[in-house]
Length: 188
Ligand SMILES: [Mg+2]
Image (tube, rainbow, N blue to C red; front, side, top):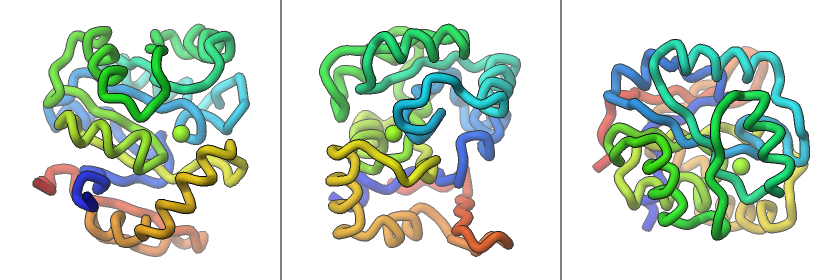
């Protein structure tokens, strides 16, 4: 069970991930979680930093699609600002939704990266399908009730232990945990 929760790569923030690195891993499309990955829970406007990162992603030749359980009207607004589509449907975690997202991207599992902040809804289903998984630290501590429950389970299992499985952890100067993993590392 634990090994399916281990991401291939872990970074502190989405914008810390270099799109060129994904290209180097053979990735052609990216599936992005929204809340606490792209922007804070309930927020409607991505930061200029995130907009620039999405632009860099496009310039690197990568396509992107958003997958979120958030309200469709809110997601539509975010999609317009970021210039990418979204996939709705049954709530995450749901491998069927990831398959739909890959159909939109026109990519297979090995050329698709899934990026999110949660082990159970983002990393686990994507690992089960053989995608390149990237875990980010949640942008904000404020979270929805269901997320808070899943966080509690993450703590029970040991999110830190899972991150250590993914790679080495080092302390950043500002005192926050910075996680850098070897992007080429195979966990299988
Ligand atoms: Mg999230």
